[in-house]
Every structure is written in structure tokens, then in C-alpha cells.
Amino acid sequence: MHVHTRWPWISLLLGAVGVLNPVGLDFLHSAFFAGEQLARNIAQPLVLTALAVIVLVVLLEWLVRSFLVKRRARGATIA
Image (cartoon, rainbow, N blue to C red; front, side, top):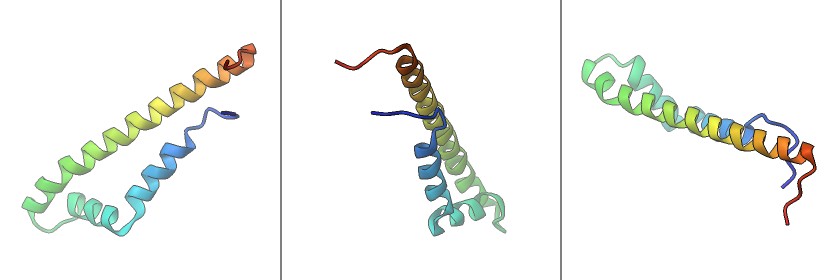
């Protein structure tokens, strides 16, 4: 595996696809712009939980990529 950058582009791309599809946009609208309180109360915890999971996955990918870049800079090889 050749890692050239620490930027976690895979998980950011998957998160963007998850949010910018019609279902994701509908959940965002229901969570923050719905006219009734019940819809907002149901959707907000789901959206915020999904956001927290995306952030954790991005951080995990960044840590793994940082480890691989540092390891490659030291000259270590995978046997």
C-alpha cells in the first residue's frame, strides 16, 4: 500500500456521498428545518450520531495514514 498523503480522502468522500444523496439531504432537512417538532426530535439524534461516526472514521483514517507515512519515511518495509 503506497500512502502519499495524510489527508483522509476516502472517508471524507464516503461521508460526502452519504450526506449529499437525496436520503441524506432529506434527513438533514427533517433534523433542522422540519415544520413539526416531532420530526426534528426524531431526526436530530440520528443526524448527530451519524456525524459523530463520520468524524471518528475520518480521525481513524488520518491516524492510520500518519502512521504509514511516518513508517515509510523511516524506511521500514512490510515483510
